Length: 406
Image 1 (cartoon, helix red, strand yellow):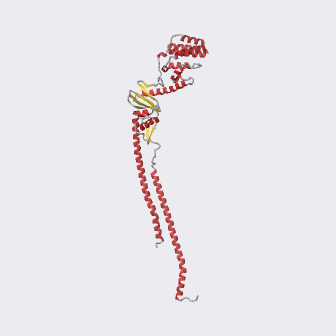
Image 2 (cartoon, helix red, strand yellow; image 1 turned 180 degrees about the vertical axis):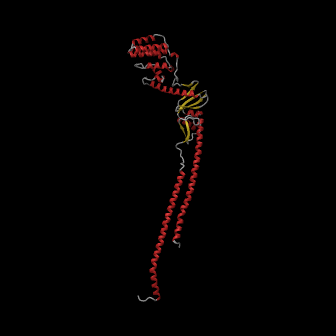
């Protein structure tokens, strides 16, 4: 029979066997974890480098992609000509046209004399006489229109309703012969706006034909109607087209060459079409949307989901794209933390230490129980041996006949 010390040693050995085996397993798991994290990081780095290279190649090929350019069908597309942007039918004309026929120094002097008579001298009759004398002479259509508008407003201020109606009717006869393209001449547009502002019970019949083509500076003060709303929309489009034309003229892109140019906060995309170009201005998001759509159609490689583009003011264009600061990993990428493997190793070691401590406590409790058992048996044996020895002695004496009496 083993003594208590041997039992305790055997119990301790048995208690430590499982934690030692667990320690080996933990070490093996930690090594595999570190290797797996390293391999994952290396694979992700290589995959990201490849995705960045693909994205840069797409950006370099994109300006020349007719499919990508055409995928933005909702964008406004402009056509260039020999002298710049060709205005479409929605605008009618792009740049104001200066005409020497609109400047008549004699008419300007007579209008100034009428203004001094009315406002400086306060003589309305003298001002009316100046206008009558001016209108009785021979003039070109635009100076005559200017004179009629000025005379009509003088009659309005003087309260001469019949004269106002007559002058407005004569102005209407001239305006009925004008074409929308004539409003590209600033003098004509100002005269038309002046006649339109005259108080009338109903708009003149030529208003709906000419008002939508007025420039922005001539629209101030006009009553809000469907015609003026259309004119404001066209004026805004015309201003955008003028800015586009300035940027295109400054770029000097050779014929037959695709280009992507800076255009304020947007990009100006030029696609060759014969000897001319087609242009569209679009945001960075619209440009990337065009590339992604072209990738779905097979005209360009698909845009890698690992890559995001960072846009903003920059001195050097990334991949030849103006406004593109850098290509970087996408924000929603699952990234391995560099502290993941050390943290997992610490957790495994802590679990191993806890298991060893638990086994040691259990072994200690088992040793204490064996010691208590041995002490209990020793005490019981000692307490039983004393009376049994006395009984045995008396029994021997009886058997030998040495005991007498009861």
